[in-house]
Structures are given as C-alpha cells and as structure tokens.
Length: 527
Image (cartoon, rainbow, N blue to C red):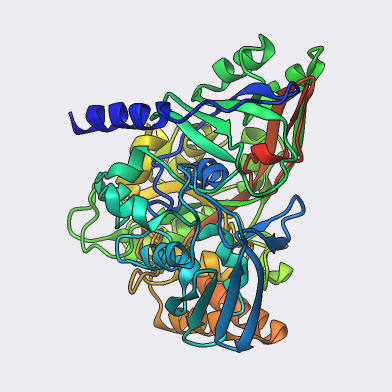
C-alpha cells in the first residue's frame, strides 16, 4: 500500500509541472535497458543504473565531459586556500526543477546527507570532515588530510534542495538494502538537464528536458522514456521494429544481426567494469552449503582451488564471444593509480592443482554451495554462472546456480544473505581508491559497502587509507599495487574479466560510447 501511495504521489507531484514549449526540432526518444534504477534518491544506492538515471536529474559541483575529464557544473570555479580546504563558487541563476533557487545551504545540506550513516555514497565523500556555506554562493569543503581523489569523486555527490527535502520528509536517504523508502524514492527535484515526469519502478521512467537548465543543451530531446526490458531477445526485437530508438546492452549473439539490419547500428568498445566472484569469508558456517560444521571459504586453499578450477579465457572466448578481457585484477587498466602489471591472474588455470588444494583443506570429496547470480543485469550473466558451476563440478564442487532478477539480487547480496555470488563493479570516478574502499576494504566505518564476502586484511586496510591521502602519483600507485598484490595472493575475490560494451540504436540516433557504460542523454542527437 505504501508503494502504491508513493507511486501515485510521484505521478501526481510531477504531473502538475507546467508543460514546456519546445523548439521545433526537439524529438522524443524511447530507450530500453536491461536494468532499472532502484530509487530516485541521489544518495541512497551506489548502483550503476540508478546513478545513470539520476545523473540526468541531479548534478554535482563538477561533472565529466564526453572524454570523462572533470569540468565545472554547479560550481563555476574553485580553488584551494590550503591543501585541506576546497572553496567552490556557485554558478549564478541556477534553479531546481520546481523553481527554488540553488544556494550554498543546499550544497552543504546535500554533502552532509551524502555523508550520513544512511547514505550509500560515503565512498565519494571520504576524508571530508565539514562542509559549510560561507555565503549564499560560496561553499567551503574541509578534508581531514589532502585527498588526491576528491575532485574526481564530486560528480557523484549530487545536490538536492534542502527546503524540498525538509517539506517532504526526505532529510535522510532511504536504505535500499533494507527496503526502506521515503518521498525521494519516487520523486525528484534536481537542477539537471532533465526532470522527472513519471516513475513506475521496473516498468518505465519518463523524463523531459528542463527548459530552465542553466547550461546550453547539446541534445535535442524533448521527452525521454526509459523502459526496462530485461530479456535480451525482446530488447533487440523492440529495437529492430523501432518500438525503441536505443537499446542496451545488445546481446553478443545479436550484434551482427543488428548491424546487418538496414537502419540500425551498434557501438562496441571496452568497459571499465570488472566482473568477479565473491565468497563469504566471515561466517563460521555458510548459509547455503552442504558443509554444516565450518566455512570452507575461510581457508585460502579452498578459495584458490575455486580460482584455479576456472578457465577464464574459455569464459571470455565462448560465453562472452571474445568481447570480454580476462583479468587477474579487480580494476581495469586506465583507472587512476593502477599498475598494468596487476592484470595477469595470480594463480594459473590448473584443475589438478585445484583438486589437490581441496584435498589438503579437508574437502577431497567436495561439497555443495549456492551461487547467487543476476540474470538480467550483465551481458550473459546467468550463462557465465552456469559455466562457473560446470568448471567447479570438475573438481568435485556441486554448485547450485540461484539466478534472479537484479531487483532481487542486489538487496539480497547487499544484505550479506549469500555464500557465493557473481557481480561487477565500476569505479565511476575512475580512481583506484573507489574500488579498494568499496570492494576490498573490511566492512567498517563506511568502507566495504560491497565487500559482501567480508574479506578482511588489516594491512590492506591500512594501505587503502594511505592511498586516500598520498598525493605523489608514483608513491600512490605503489601503495595500490602492494594492496592488490596481497589481495590477489589471498584470493580475496576471484577476478574474471572486464566486460565489453554494446549499444544499439536506430538510424538517426547518435551518441558517444561511454567507457563507464552510462548513457548520457545530454549528448544525444536524434533525427
């Protein structure tokens, strides 16, 4: 009933907005995605599709251009009076979608909200100790120590209206992992190039261009309707019949067919997302396993056995049809402070060695375990999990693949209700500290939000904290390398591959391919 009321409220609240008058060349577009945003709250969930949708509605002090470089956004300029003080001058004449003017108080409030215990965006505010409004158009951010990655993270700290949040009971983010909601879950009031018209979770989200946006639009979109089509074949069919103008991802087996269809195209390229396996290393007894007197994953030999049983090259070639790049690291080359020497796998594919390791650990007869896996979030995700299960079967491990929609998978895994799982992570600020903090660091003090296997190494934690404050590029890379070498040696996770991108569109739709796999309607041209 609460969700029904909130949906009704969302529709009603957004329908009262006056319809803008578009220029003659404005076009409507329908785009289809495999996944959907989990919430409209800009600080509630660090999740790829959620952040993709919200980046059209909400903005940060800075943003990334087409080449992923930082440029001014709500802040027109900034300086550093000292190594730990950042002073931002806000742009004049910026208004929220409901007409309220942007002020420094809104910025300070939004930062504090993003830093709160309920926020899932604390990775992007790491090291910040205070944010204050100096005057109506100046904001001062103070960090505990010099932070080399701060400016790279600020596009993800999105600004919302303080008075709007107060009036609607949304002073704190809702906790998506616990299923909590508030007014901001289904309603939005940002400053971005698009504003929310209607929201039906897992069905459609309608945006329209903001006629009062402070910047000069590069796009010519009047209305954009996002529809979730989880099925790859259905998504491709919708594109080829022009029911949708843009669809992603295009399943690997369909790329040639779409390219061969008159009037359609596919953009392909590398993505910075890394796919991996995570194992529960904290519980004394696994939740979903035949072993009832211990936790096999606490033993490095078992984790290494799983790793060495996997022919990752075969997964990349056969399941991913050559579109993926096998890796031994949780971070792609090109991420800031990542040494390319980390890419080879730490332990070779060797099923016989894997069997020996299991026997040494006391599991010579194998055991069973459940592998949680999304079936509508990543390219061929369920097929990859089935391949992993088949390979582990060859060393005596019986894997039950528990595939489910992403809407169920992420709350389940995020709440640690899992023994063994498969998913991917993209450090959207293109910095190593992001992945280290979110995936590798022990789950404590706002770190390790998606370290769902609870891997923990105090030495690695200490190195990660040094990475945050080290300003010398060579020393910082050395710290990242030492941390990841230790992680690889212990098989804290099992890195698999970097996923490839595949965006499909009808003739007349043009957009640059983004390496973070974020569709940005602000860069679309539609004819």
